[in-house]
Length: 342
Image (cartoon, rainbow, N blue to C red; front, side):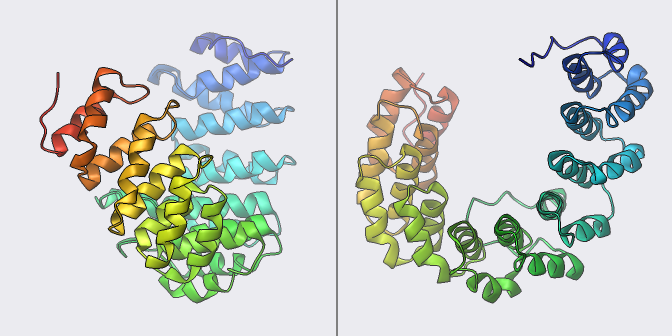
């Protein structure tokens, strides 16, 4: 059995870079990702060594640690690991390189390779980069599955590579490409995404969610199909699109006994957005359920939608939170104009 020792001190971690047992080298890599400034140079050298370790688990931890350190001088060492024999190491290396600020061309080139783990990592890194740039400009966070604001921008090269990946032989790459196109705010790609609505289930679900993110309702039949399977993401997307065709499927999902509570809450919120009072009953059921799954989400929806009819359920939770943060409950009650119980 692989047991990881307790986190060593920086000095012990530097010694354990050359430990015989892999679990000690893993622990060393984790520790070296968070060291005081006086140990940083030695830690970087140790992590460079661990990136070349014979054990893939050690190499993964070393790459993750280099990403935490955030020192761009290690980029050549990180990029070299894109040739690693282990798929997870190759993918982690590219994601780490993206976080460290490698050239976009590196990410785009990886998307075009016939190497699904690397292609998926490249697509994710491109999406993360655009989202990061959006945040750096001070854009407000957007809710899940909402039409994007158009403030985010991706280069034509990145968009072209992502669009090409939508036709890849790997269904995992196609599904990731669909999600990435939404993250890149690729409104010009909606027809291409709609063309994937007849693909295998994984891809068509991703394409439908991407279309919803871009404000396109052509994926609604697929979202309804996914909703019947208990998909939280589909429930949220249908609520954001606000199409009346989703009303009865959402009500059925909200009322079904075995619908996951998180999905039930999302379906309830979606019904409220459609002006359907059955949504309040669904949220009430989640707030009062025995299990805590979905309860914090339901409280947040009650707060955002200002559902004063659910005030008694929130007040009951203040006395017995049952999996909900008290500060969230007080904020929700305050938003309803009821004051904040002690």
